[in-house]
Length: 88
Image (tube, rainbow, N blue to C red; front, side):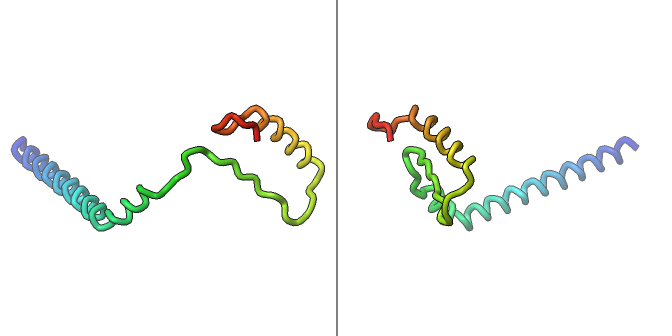
């Protein structure tokens, strides 16, 4: 009985190792297939400094709560300077 359990464990271990091997081979194949796309995306240009973009409301003035929120945002942004030291 012990020999049978040992054989079953060996078969299970072999199946698991084979499965892991094929998963690794598939991943390597996918990485190889998409290598040029991945390389291009990895080298995509980015901004050196973060940029804050505030989109305006193109449809007209909003509710008065927006004015208060924009005043609060203005106060927060007054404490920050750009890379040259200028408050913008």
